[in-house]
Image (cartoon, rainbow, N blue to C red; front, side, top):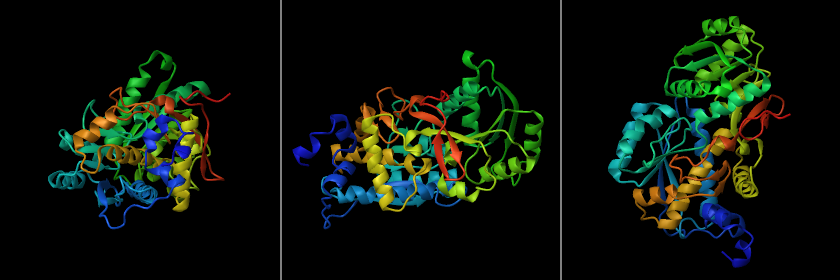
Length: 399
C-alpha cells in the first residue's frame, strides 16, 4: 500500500483492516488467481428456526470475501468461506464441528445461535479457535472460544437503564425455555439485584417452548398483570409466535426484544403485527451511528461492501463482519499456516481496534472485546422499516 494512502490513517485502524478491506477501497489489487483459495470453515443455521439469521450471515460473509479478495486476499492468496448447515440443531452442530476438528482446521466461524454455540464450545478446549456468531454465549476466559458483539446479558442491563429513565417500573417477561431464554433469565437475575434497579418489578414471568404454536395463555396473564413494558426474549420462528399472541391480546404497551430480531426480513414478515413501540438494543451501526471517527471509517467500508452486494443493513447482517475481519487479520499477521494457538494469541492481545460495532479490547479476557458502552436502545420505525436510536450509548434515554 502506498505511503501516501496510509499516512492519514491511524495505526490502530490499520491493525484492524490491515491489508484486507481498507485496501479494497484504495487499491483493488486482485489476489493471484492461480493460487488455490485459503478455506475458512463456517457453521451456520441455514435451515431450521435460525435460518433467517444464518442466511443473512452467509450473504454478508460473501460480500466480505469479495472485498478481501479484491484487496489481494491473504498475502496474495484468496480466501473462500466453506459453509456447513447445522439445521439450528445442537446435535448436528456437534457432528459438523467434530468433523472439522478431525480435519485439523485452525479456526471455525459459527455456529449461529446460543444453543448450537454452547454445544460446540466443549469440543474446542484445545482448539481450533471457534468464533461463535451469537452474543448469547459467555466464553471462558483464555479459552479457544470467542463471541461476537456485546453480550446479551449486557444488553439487558442497557435495557433496564432505559426503562428506569422512561419510568417503566412494571416489567413483564416472556422467554423461551431454550439456551437463549436461559441466558436471559440469568442476566435479569443479575441486573435486577443491583441497587439502581430496586424500583423495577417483574409483574409477570412467562415461559414457552420453541416448538409451541401459540402463547395466548401467557399473553393473557401478562396483560392482566398491567405491565408498562413487555420483554420478549426469543429468536426466529418463536418470536413470530409471541408477536401474534401480543397482537391478539390487544396489548398496547411497549415491547422490548432480543436483538436477534433486528432483521429487515423479519420486520417485513411481521410488519402488520409489530407493536407501535418496538425496541431493542444494538451497536450503533444498526442506526448508522458510529461512536468514534475510526469506527465511522470501519462502518463506511462495511456499508459500501454490503451495498455493492445488494444487502440491507441490520443487526444480524453486521454481527458477522467484525469477526471475519479479526480472524482474517490474524491470518494476515501469521500467514495461512497459522495454528489455532497463534490465531488465539493474536486476538487475545488486540486492543484499541475500531470495528463497525465499536473499539475492541480483548485484553480483559472477555473473549468478545466489547462492553455495554458499545450499544444503545433503538426503536423500530414501521414506516421506513429501519431502527432509530432512542437512547445514548449505554442506555440513558435521550432528553
